[in-house]
Image (cartoon, rainbow, N blue to C red; front, top):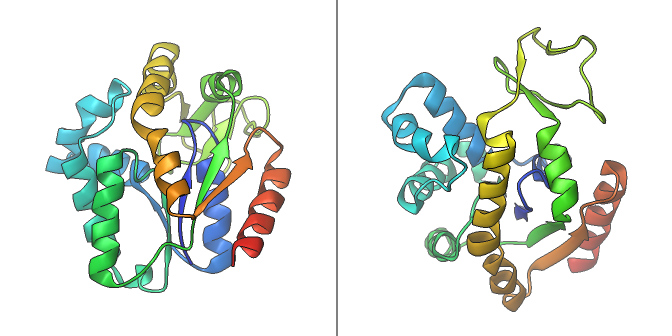
Length: 216
């Protein structure tokens, strides 16, 4: 399976992408995680991306496209993938089309999780992330066993700078202007599957499975 998952920031795409990765035995290509790791390691890529990420702006296309090209060259992507966090602009989508054409493969589906702005704001403001292993928690729906401590590695839980109120507003503006046009782009290609992402996690999972089965 070759899939893309689209959603507003905090729309739940990471959760669903991880599940689909396990279900279909394909890698979850999470560009945000790759970028955050690069920032933490202090690589040139990380230095280039850091200023954009901390302010809630999109990382430039040339950086993102290079990340995807390098990731697709790895062995585990040969049988498929699920892209989480890419593409985010029409330019990236067109570049991805070109890359897939070069590799003579096609997308099976683009899953779009439609989530209202009010739900997004609540989810992001209450999200906490482990500073060591990157595990994600929500103070209401998925709290850690011990306040401020990761269940998996006992690392410190933090609020990412781009999950704070001012950055959330900027991220939503960026999504509206740059990412929402992708919905029409993939709808025209006949591969867009729209899912109500405001439902419970289990209901979203079921809706995705049904939509993928019916699209085959």
